Structures are given as C-alpha cells and as structure tokens.
Length: 535
Image (cartoon, rainbow, N blue to C red; front, side, top):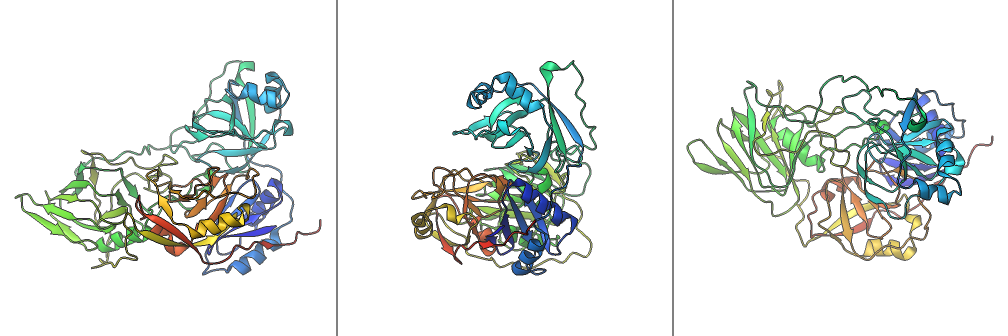
C-alpha cells in the first residue's frame, strides 16, 4: 500500500489491484474513521478527503493501515438486467483484437455477472468488474468527441454504459435503451456500488416492455416564474452563461457526481453575508459581466468576486453608480446593469432571501460537465426571491481575499506535488515548476487549459481510472496541463502531476484568459509505503 499526497485535506491510497481497493473501501465503510469526509474508490486507489481539524494525516494513515488487508465481501446489491443491442461500431475490431468471432464476444459479455465496482467519469457511469478476462481490451488510441447515451463499452478489465452523450474513449460494442441516470429517480443512478449486473442480448430475447422507475417529483432544471411572490428579478441582459451556484453537492460520489458549486467559494460566501443570507445560499455566478435585471418589489443586493461597474436606473430614469462588496438597497422597478470587470473572471450576485429555484440532488448549483442543475439564465426569465431568513445579520463590508489577476499578468499558485509526479521525467517536473504557463481560451468551469513546454512522461503505461479533486493539474497525452476547476470529472485516466494548495483554489478560479501561471511547489513529492499484512 502506498500513500500518495494530494493536498492537506486529501490523500490517495494506492493498492495492488481492484480487489484490495474494494476490500479496504468496504472495511472503511463498516468501521468509519472519525474525520473522514468522503471516500472515492477507483480501479486500484481510494481518494480519502478528511477534516484536518478532527484527525491528522499521520493518525489517519495509521488508522487506515490497521484496516487494510481484509477480504472482499461477496456482492450483495440488487441484480440489474441491462438489455443490449450488440451493434457497437467497435465490435468487429474488438473481436479481431481478441481473435474471437463477433458472436463469441457477445456470448462472453452476456455470460457472466458483473459487480458495480465504483462510479465516476460522469454521473451514473459505473465501472463494472468481474467479466470474462478474455474481454480485456485497451481504450481507443483516439477518444471520440461524442459517444451517444446508452452506449455499452469495454476498457481494460471493465464494462460500462454511457449515461449521457459525452466524449469517451471506450470500445463501443452495443447500445441499451435503459436510462442510467435520472434526477427524477431515487437514487438517480440506476447502478449503485456493490450492485450486480447482467447484460442481455435483445436480439435473442422475446420482445418485452422495458419498465422505468416512476417519477417521484418534477425536478426539471427550469426556472420558476413569478406567481404572486413579493419580490422577483426579471433578466434583461446576459453575456456569457450566468449560472446559479451554491456550495455544491457533497456526498454524491457514489452516484458519480462531483461537488461542483461556486468556483470562488470565498466570494460566494461574502456575497451572502453582505445581504444577511446563510453562507451556502445560491447566488448568481457571472463570468466577465454583461448582466442586467429589473427588480420587482424591494430587495437588497451585493456583488463580490471580480470587481465590475454597477449602475442602477430607477423608475424616473435617474442612474447612480453602486459600490462593489457592499449591501445595496433596491426599489421596485430598479434596473441593474453590471459592466465588464477589468480583473478576475467571475462575479457573484446575491439577493437577500436568495433565489427560489428547484434544487437537483440537494443543490442549486449548475454542473456543466454533469449537465445537472438549473438552466443558465436568459433574457425574459423571472426568478422569485423568497423572504429573508429570520434574525439574519447583514455584513456592512467584505474585504477581498486577494488581488484579482489581470490578463497578461503572472499569477503564482502554490501546489502540492503528487499524486503522480513520479510518472514524469525529472526534466518535466523541473519544467513544470520553472516555466510560465499561458491560460488559453479553451477554458471553462471544468478546467483551465494551459499552454507551454510540453511535459514528458517517464511512465507511458495506461493509468487506471482514479479520483481527482478540484485544483488537480492533470497532464493528458499532449503534455499540456489542465487545471481542474469546480465541474471536473470525478475520476480521470491521465496522471495528475500536482494539486493546487487549498488556500489558492479560489484564486485559481479567477485567473482570466491571457494571464500566465507559475507553479510553486510547497514540498517535494514523497510517497509513503505501508507494509501489507501477512495472510
């Protein structure tokens, strides 16, 4: 067992194989360790996030080591039957690679029972283990830009089903009509960890009706319209997509759903404090300004994050300029317009009482990668504003946590080296820390794509999928790093050379296109080896 550094509040535990990883995961679930916030299992690793105020990394490592070495329990979850039409475009090529006929591949794929080993990549995507070992095939050398929802694929020792249309590199052998992920269903993911799966060849079955789970409640990510409530905002102008964001969806890893939430969490909390809301209330995340709305009824507004000009025009046509990072009283009919920030990327607008939008999986955050959460705002949308919480306290001013970065400037981010620093050459690690990386326009809430001197890998093996965190700096095959932000995938298959330190995560989310980043290692990479138990 190896303990690999991730960040001050996270470690990656690497084990020999999937069986050992799942056995330790089961032991940690059966005998929880105080202070652990979440565990994300993967092909041969466990990502353990913890509260360093409750338990130190040293104590946590010792407690985990004491539980390692046990035996896996037999799968005990429900058996899910997945009907498949074996028409995948890679099926003939897979058969050729394995020196089998197409019919033999189908027979092997439908001949056994699979275990839902872990989830990741996208909501509802389950890695299914336990299939016939003869079906082990590599991922495609060049991933597809779009794989249709319901596609059944193979990669390494795993089988899987794509819940939604997305990019992907698995070998596609068939399709299923089953809905694998549905926020109107409880649980949303059809396949749950420790569940069992069988694939059924539709062409060999008698026709039968595929039953779907009953809808529990309509949670479609759409805006509510004003219906007699005392206050609301009417959207009049939108530049880049304006999204609802709160503190995200903790504890949803078992469904393949990452935390998401505001990219600059400190600014979100400050905006809420300024209007007297609880820190985790939903606010509007506005990228590069250009947003306007009309107030219906009275309200109190605050804007934090990237500073931008704020103008308010009343019913009589008089216009005033409003301050940034201060509470602002609004009257019925006031028209608010936010300009373009000279520095930073994202501003946060809160209203006293919050916004009345339907949560999805317990959060009002919009996750653009997972495609869940309320829709982006559009001109004409009307969003009700609930009454303010009782006994709320309004902050009069919030000081910025850091100077907002500008295009052309160089921003220094502290990083923790690991967990896969040793997959790169010494020269690549030196180049990663020495050079200034340019932030490219191909950046989003998923991550910041960087451009610079390509990083060369020492280890060219295919990395089994493992969990990633916000701030992970993943290096794909082209050697150009991607710095993951809030909507990053839960698991990934490229090595992470380093992770942004916790105190610089909000700053990373405010770096604009055209700025440069230099990484400063706060420590050397060091993996710890824990001897295994004698069986």
